[in-house]
Image (tube, rainbow, N blue to C red; front, side, top):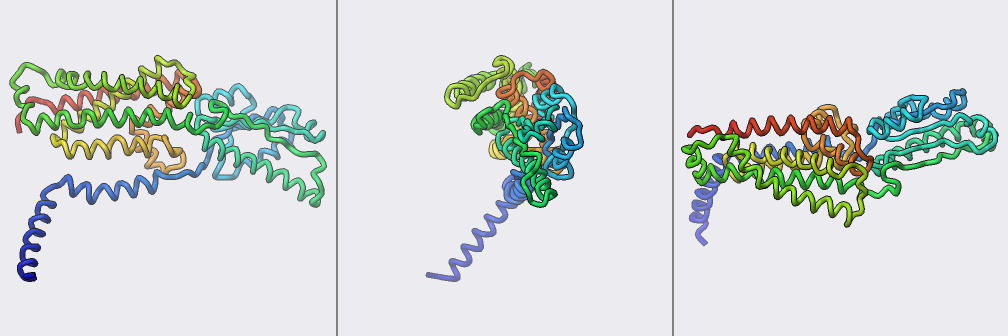
Length: 376
């Protein structure tokens, strides 16, 4: 083997590949920026910890001993008590998702404690079964610590006033089935994936083939182009959505406690946002390879990591939380879980509808701007 010849040919090929790599800015961006984005995303976004979980504390009895029992819920980074004297108010907060659990001290707590059969009611929000189980552990631990403290005060003798039983109930997901929590979130991911990827190549493909210039000499307007590209994929997405809902109900047996028509309409609105996002990316990049990469990084991955699908957004840093609320998927994720498991929450429906409609209008306007009749 001629070593000198091999080295000369190899170095020539290496220089050629390096120059080609440096010219391709999209590859450079993927190679250098994507790892940095992923390490920040995973490092800050991945956390199974539950911290500062809001818990409504209903003190129907305000005696010192009742307050002493729930004192353990304060002064910890794991729980944030929300004090109230009304069970109705606490239930409304639980339905709205403002609290993760309710701790209720009944009015006859001191007398039943003296009789040795005191009970504390714990109602958990089962829409997120893993968070509910964690919160249950925190509350039971705090009350157990109080009971142990009473034993120590009594000189390690049996607690003179009897024990306290925590009676636990889980709302919205009585059996604590994780599938009920995951499947509605999977519908969001499916709508995000098919929405952004189906349309992310459309305009870029036409730019690369030169067919878009032919349309520029016709009377067609940019917004008409956007709508014409959008409608066929809305039909495909609508069929996919029906398949997802049928699978959720009949394969995975997820209850649908909210209005099915509202679930369908709000899902179609979110699908429109995803399709427009893909069209906008396609119009800006004008390159199919870049458009597919950006669609993956800008739509599916954030929807998976930062929408609240897997991780509780209250446990991530404030900056990541702000970014997560910029994503349309975050607003749809919370709503569809509520509609499936808790029923119609009109304030949440109205809020998410307004936000998603605003995204649709802005993206439609921005996309038609990328289709202005101008030849570069």
